[in-house]
Image (tube, rainbow, N blue to C red; front, side, top):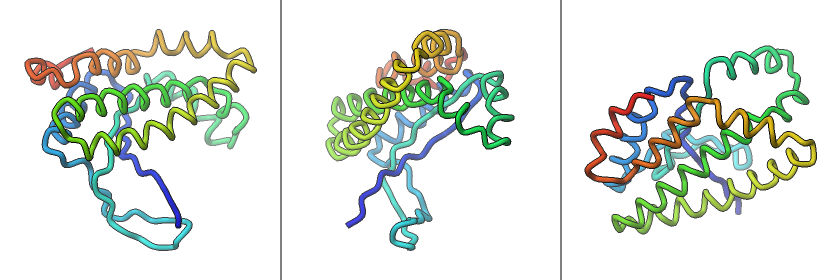
Length: 178
């Protein structure tokens, strides 16, 4: 059989929207209803199907980082893109969220969701581990750390995850402007 992983990725280039987006994710977890993909197309089975209980995540970067990627992407400069620290930043955003959402689901007794998050986390942590190992071999660690420290969207995701799942902080989570 074919196995796959589906994630619903909400991409942003602005920090202020992060809190609101994560507030919606918290509501989905509390309700036990994750995102549904209506038309999941498989390249392996040549079929389309509906997939429910798909984890939604927020990833993003500042506009200047995105702008720096446009020309290489348009020119198919895969060497530049494959070595850019934004890859690791996005993977770290995904891992941080999967961990926080898994822990929150466990805390509120949504065990079926805990399994979903754990399965996705295993895959993404493996990808991140490989990417970090490759970056260290290419001595990109300082460049990655610099991007993580200065990117306001990454910082907004981190700060909102610190608040994630705190019931009294739910309203604040949706309104956080960073």
